[in-house]
Image (cartoon, rainbow, N blue to C red):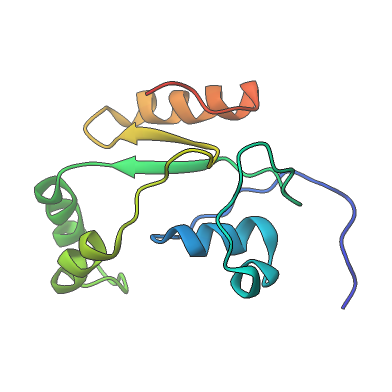
Length: 121
């Protein structure tokens, strides 16, 4: 396996519901083995901004019902809420409300990326 040292910016969309999943995205498989909590001030191998799209279950359920041909059935929504461990310090994240209009959501995310750090909620 060849290591990519180009350090290009990348956008990845995934659920990463648990803190451990996000630790693996930042530090690789070794995060599983260490099982140590991330310490504030640590220099992770990758700088990642997690975007926590937050909203009431009824709004998300309504959006799921409108999707056609999507792998996520409405019946699994509660299990996703039950599994969710929302991001918290020292994770680098922003929380964006799904109740905002799409252009405002995109602007908030873009602003956070361009500033290179998390914004206050």
